[in-house]
Length: 174
Image (cartoon, rainbow, N blue to C red; front, side, top):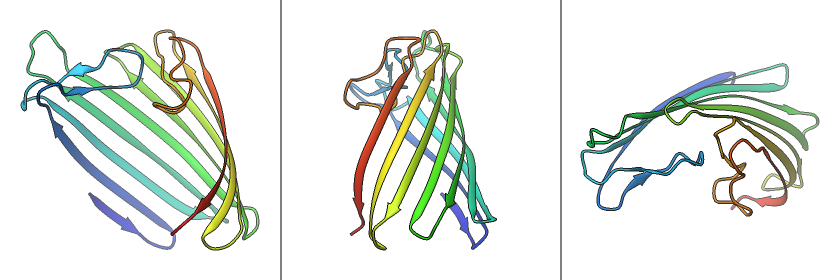
């Protein structure tokens, strides 16, 4: 990972790679069965690029996550997904922040696509504690079954069906 941060902007580039093994598989969480990675020649690689800029009291960020799964099985094609995202955060007061983000994921080999939108309000009780409320909705394409939260309560929706979620919580940093 390479990362640069300053008071006004920053960027990060990261690459990671996982190798397969006995019973290993790559799950795209889109409703399609996981891709087997049964040997150490199987690769699940991710390239992540992200940047942000601060101006007029707001922080704007955006990026791209490319995932590429390669198997040694000639009958299984290379599977890739691309996720693009754009977000913003604004401090309304020193104690109140609002942020939101939009994600778009495309997996051409599975013919699955989805758009996720989130919005969150945060009220800081102190430097280490805050309460928040967050809402999200995912719009799935006809064959996609992405969930708002992978492995969350209720599981993934049926293919082509959207899903909504709301979360209220208390955050404390140790």
